[in-house]
Amino acid sequence: MADKLRVVITDRQKNVKIPTGIRMLIRRCCHAILETEGFKGSAEIGVTFTDDRELKEISLEYFGKATDEAVISLPAGENGEYDVDKVTGAKLLGSIVISVTKAVEQSKAFDHSFQREMAYLTAHGVLGLLGYSYNGEMGKLPMREKEEWALYQLGLPASTSYI
Image 1 (tube, rainbow, N blue to C red):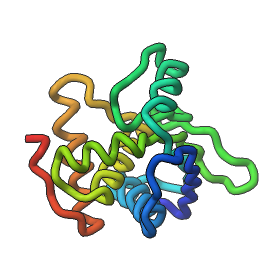
Image 2: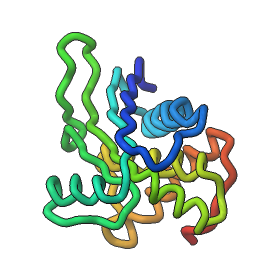
Image 3: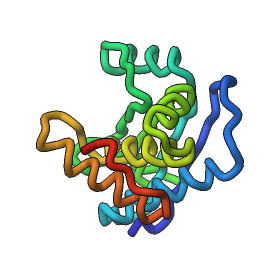
Image 4: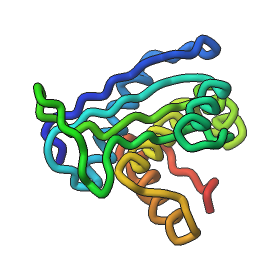
């Protein structure tokens, strides 16, 4: 289990008022993923709330193509090797960027709460920081199972939308 987890949340969008409790839910979700993955030591994760336009711009800058996804991961490490904050000793895992406007759309499309969608996107993003990917069908199911397990641990209703 992570010794200490620091989650730095930045809200750079103005379209959606972030409900009370979302920031705590995001922190709890990050913790649940790291615990499930048996992460050792202290860690820091950045989470940025943005809109579709900015997420596409960031995706284009980092990956060379714009995305229609609701979340992207910007890992700071590779193969379990991360930079370490010299002051805190925390491993810098990287940042996840969430399009809050897309999260609202998807919560309606999948007929579940905005809270569940934000937690799901966070779980997906943190797994991306740890090296998981949806590439190929064999990569998708194990990642989805880990995402759903994290949401279950947080007391959020199960979803069969990925089956």
